[in-house]
Image (cartoon, rainbow, N blue to C red; front, side):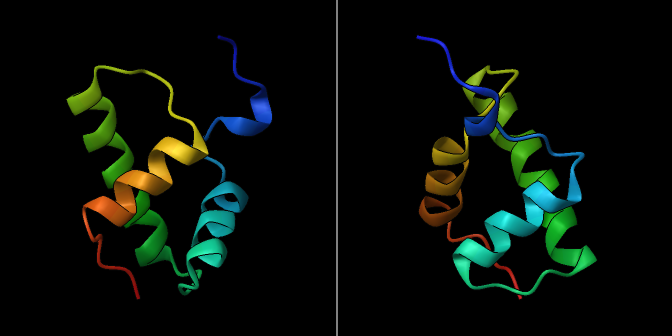
Length: 69
């Protein structure tokens, strides 16, 4: 199954991280973006994946009850 570019997360793009924060109703702060980047690294390592989709990552954030402002 191929994923479109739109479905994938680029953790170096601030606007993509801000989109996730808006969707979760959280502040679009540097601290929150840094937290998302760290959580992305953890999920990639634990899942053995190099690329994550928005759906996978958002489910991870909810399941892990990631603390964001």
